[in-house]
Length: 69
Image (cartoon, rainbow, N blue to C red):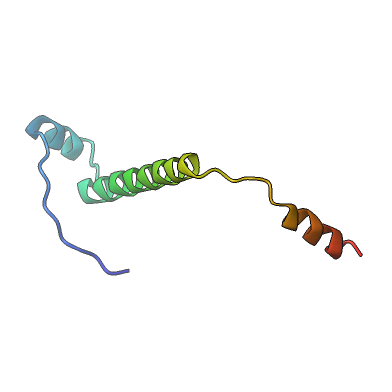
């Protein structure tokens, strides 16, 4: 997987504590960004569904009946 180098700001105290606890800051940042992206996508999907919810479609009931023959 390709990577992009980026820079971000971290509070001094938090950075010190992370180093003391031997936390890989890069890995933690990747995990945090990945979680934020998943949450944003889920929120976006939900908002799209709320704007245009699914409605019953009689076609699918008929299609199911065809497959049971």
